[in-house]
Length: 452
Image 1 (cartoon, one colour):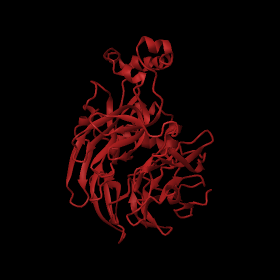
Image 2 (cartoon, rainbow, N blue to C red):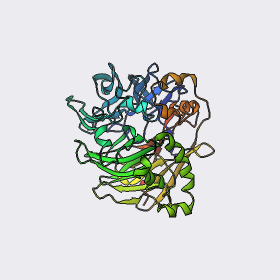
Image 3 (spheres, rainbow, N blue to C red):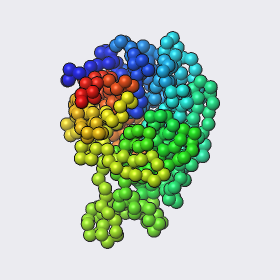
């Protein structure tokens, strides 16, 4: 372990975690780190297993309350509002998913709102998602409230809800129906959903992923952006797209690939006429055949482009370049430094030995700095306890994964590092399980960034 790495969460028998890589965990003066706490991480979240919400200050966990609205990859979307000590966290409010509001100066719950919050601006405008739908379609949702639009593939009354934490103003600014029908081919797919909202640095636009299930059994993803009032919707890319962040106000970096042979075949009107039952079998055959150069030439389709970190301009005429061609070679969970967006913190998925890497990357020099390696643990999840949480999940999702895999990936045993910055850019925090418990660690990176 590096001498620059340190434990932030208490060293006790509990498990501590924050969640995703797209939020700043510390408050404005960087004295409090929003944190979730739970004892048993071997079971996927359920409505019967609430998680404790609080913050860490001077090594001590200060409890604020409980929440049922959480998952291990993205936590409960706990986040601070601007330069205040107001902390918001998703929770079950009555019979809907909503937002609890805490004053951490007094350590009191001061409000509960009937809308969720995925991201929030410095002046208190929050943007929420439909977490019941996300759970049903296999995304990062919450267990315990059924999706009222389960029979509707692209609902008009579900999407991105904008609401003000302080004034309670609210509006559905963009529906799933609007997104599904924006510059999309006819009958694109079913079970459409919106996920992964990320505000740009100036908090004027939102990037997000639009996903849907395809008739051939696959899934497609579109990287999209929109103004915070729901106007000027754009589609930047379509293909196999994964984790992303804003490089600056005009560019989004994302891992994936676009323009593959499979995507081009799917857009062919003749191919779309094939019944779904036949299409699923044909897809597997086509995948194998497309690897043969002769067939590729005959049908005038280029070979599938390799996966890479792609950089897209947020513009009407989208331009695509690369973030770190030949340097960044695998998927991870990126976050650009709030105080110096030339720098990126990122991680990797486990290698064959179960090792995840944490590293810095400087865009201007294309320099990568390895910070540490952290090993996963190989404990087994509680298989029996996942069954009740899967009752309302789409059958197409359940057919894609074994119960064992679903139990592991939805439990707290699956622990990506998900690194995130302090606003000052001096420190990053990350979740890890390499010492046997889920804990939050810190890494001082100021010396790397300022070493010129």
